[in-house]
Image 1 (cartoon, helix red, strand yellow):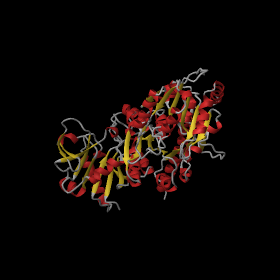
Image 2 (cartoon, one colour; image 1 turned 30 degrees about the vertical axis):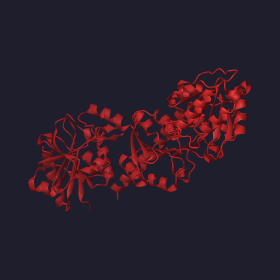
Image 3 (cartoon, helix red, strand yellow; image 1 turned 45 degrees about the vertical axis):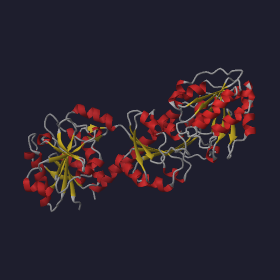
Image 4 (cartoon, one colour; image 1 turned 90 degrees about the horizontal axis):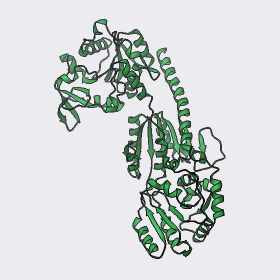
Length: 557
């Protein structure tokens, strides 16, 4: 038997709030939400104190145990202490003894499991009563720096219904310990239900999905994952989003902060699993390249709906959905989505999409190799161009990513080239990347996700696969709109110059542009969003049916 008890106070209600605890919110009675949180927390045995036969049966269905409450303890003015004392004595007669108790009401449906844990953890020899408080000015007297809890004014909790305490101490005095201490509830946990109007706003909150997004980005991996996820998340509205990044692979985290997303960092898998357990996500996104079986099995145990991106690893078989737009596969699996139609193009490229006039002569070439360019192809391309006098009458624009480490070297080459009669300009921020691409006659780039963004503007390009993985990226090879090159330790100067010369030809660029017009790359985000929503709803129905069946089986055992 557990040493802890969680007591949910759920009377039938007076005339003003009749059946409030049973009102349907997002398809479930209000009582369900606090029952689910407390039972899922596994912090102790969960009992419901009620006078209502209907509440008794609903509580049993969802896994709660019952303490019948006499009518004498159902009045508005009944002290909470009297209900608690009766309930503990009732359990004592049933030979059930506990050390700690948490009392909570269904009118606090959004309290997190991690917060519930604190109510038990913070009970000590000196602190034998802990209340939940809503932080307001001048409502606490003294902060305890060690425990991060507060000594509060006695009058503050006269009507509050979240409190934990040592049972022995409470029963010996028949009231809560003085001085009283409190744990501050987070703003997102505080949605107190006092009337039916509050239920409507609660329903909107409960309908939000909790989405945990794990993203890896560093100098070697690049920033493609960051921009890919941003394109997807910016299409999701009213969901609760948490970004999770490895402390050693958090390049580009400022991009998430610019969009006001919450971020948490982890240094090992144990910390990551704890973050997942505390957040309790409905959906987990993984944009971390190939996943392992071991990792996927661990997060699969959290019962979240899992969506992986750019994943060819053994772990992808454990995902509910896998999107691999940069690869092509003849294998048909119902939950695998390959090909460019699932490319995630950022919003700025929709803004800059327009009918382009193909210039007879090339006036601008854009060079961009992602956020980090770990192979320093940018410098090699610049040096190669500096040897070609026929390119002196063309503007060369270079976009350097936020993770690029050799900016000064590029600047030195740029200054020397400009002195030699070339026209070279560096752009340090990629926020205007779509504008520069749209204004260019062709682009020289890596063979990553940027290819889709360039192609969405129907601008022809030379793509250079910077590593073995990029050589597997299929679009540049089958689209007909890209001159595709392979990079093996060093740039192939002859093939690169040959490709640039081909791009100077009007007919070549026209042919490549016409080929890119055959691909609609601006709807990929919407397609992914639609698939995730539809498949998640199916998944949720199956899970809910399994839960209800389990509870029914428990009742009739």
